[in-house]
Image 1 (cartoon, rainbow, N blue to C red):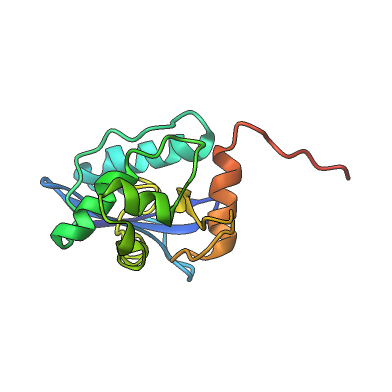
Image 2: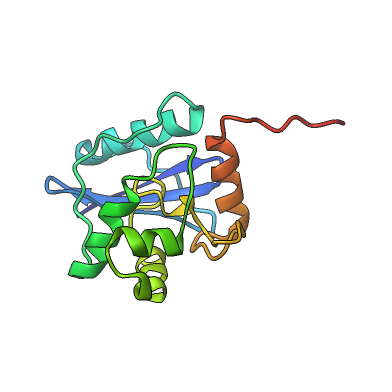
Length: 157
């Protein structure tokens, strides 16, 4: 597996992958050295993430190679169906995978998503609209939802 570190508006981001695809994209909570030369197999991912943060990309076109259980993979596939700028609830996601009682398992699978932003787990919120749980921190989830919102909040001051 190849690894690189890029900078993003939300902090240092680690990308791991190989010719089989991108295995992991995670936000780091510590300062890291930015990779000088990005491995060829990770270049496209780094470019697409930068485009996303610049606001010129809404969908990712990458070969993915995330490792998870069959259930996690089902949930992650469903997450990929949530459109840019939209949200869904854990309850709705449970219904979409065909098991309304699996809400906790769906939330757990969502939290184990190894492909931050690319598989948009940040677009899942509580049924009451609350920003519940996010491995990268609620402040990052809020930032991502604001970034994707078609309605930009303007500052009064």
